[in-house]
Image 1 (cartoon, rainbow, N blue to C red):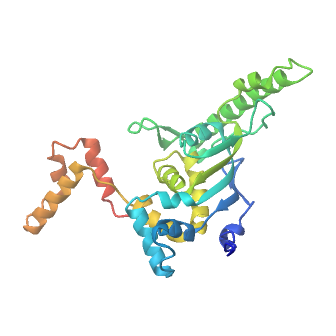
Image 2 (image 1 turned 60 degrees about the vertical axis):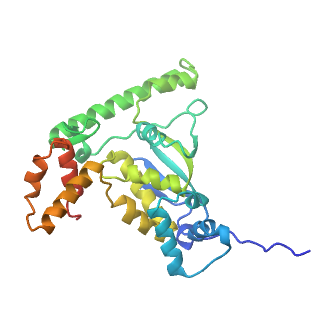
Image 3 (image 1 turned 180 degrees about the vertical axis):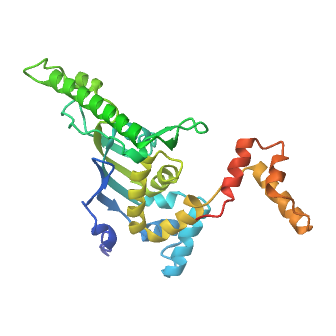
Length: 298
């Protein structure tokens, strides 16, 4: 009987070189690569499984990867997985966990005592509420006010932790840890192992590495972007081209662009800004969004 061919585990040198290394994030956080499964060849293999090995030409593999991502053929990307160890503030973790397509195992404050580690934003990251984006920040405050705000955050965090220690101390109240933890603020640090396939990881990054994402989660996404770039470079290139640095246009926006192109071909192209203002189908906010999409990238 013919023995099956012995398979070797796919290996990516750039990933092997950073296994176990922690990339510092914020003041106490980090992202650390624990393990990975698959490489770019695994994606190509899955896409071509219906008709065998097919071609091995690198250029054709790259073209196929770009085609799959461009046409949103997502299942081949699910053949690759990554496992990360992440230390992050609780409020960032609550944003992160909204991506429900991963496997997560978090440090349990029911069993263990959390460390006295809190995220305190740097002076340059303390800003006022945005008047346009109801879930974002706007311009910063002056340095003196920012330092005062930092002092308030530090004092409140430590006060809460002092009470936490007192409640959990066996010589104090001896309160159950699952109850004592409810007094801690959302800037306390937690940790988890997070395992996700490449398709859902790219979706995570499309939202969290976006310039509009909250800074405190975006810096984690940026660190993960570096890992993905090392892991699957051709996929990363396509992801940047077709998703991260690309734009989607609504039906109304396409109508505007088609009308402008038609007028340009007739030699009667109007002033773009005046043309937008004259359109009733687009709100002022939509007009601003369209202009932003058409800005020359820096």
